Length: 312
Image (cartoon, rainbow, N blue to C red):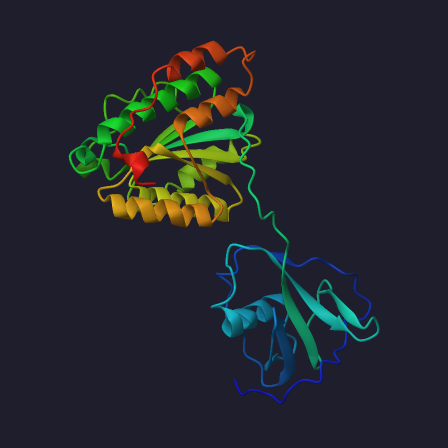
């Protein structure tokens, strides 16, 4: 599609329409621009940039989004939400793209990221938390560093979940070839055990299970491998607006370098790197909690001081 001359920026707003927040989540998956013999010049603004282009006459919101992606795709954070706004000449400023808007004349539009909370507080409550146990399987035992230690800590987390009534979701990576979850981990009462071949735990079955639990805000995640299944699960979850706590003393990899850089990357992306004792005590929050004594008994013996924590 040929580029048009630079737009003057004096666009027309859609007459007779009420303003509507055309809020979009992940920006992928939108179809291409449809065919039209006539095109209309549009100035596409994002951040400090402004690029003139054109779209077919009659194009709507989805076509504008697709054009923003083609122009600025390498700069757009796909996990954020945005609103498309139109410059309204009669107001002298941008307004949210009117409902049912279609491009009929030269105009200026911009893509605005919605403000998000920059600091994740990481508060945990039993009523809004789910535990994810990732691929703690028999065949990984000889390959994963400090596997015995993370099994011990993982069992403590599972016991804590049972005491506090927290749902647990367990995955097993290709169990036909890699075996089931290790026998040391007691899966009594877990909500779901599901096989997978995808690295991320965010499977349709898992999403369906989460949908059955009202008010889920946080996932406590542990298992193997930190730089593969744990990392991809955590990124998928925060992309869906779920707060993620990765338990450092219950997560490992074959390589400590892979593990270290994965934890650093996750922390930079707003994922909370924590420990099993911190999680369990945060969930009870008060020595007068009716389950405090049971949780206290779980953590009387500290988690193993293996090489894991020196490599975080």
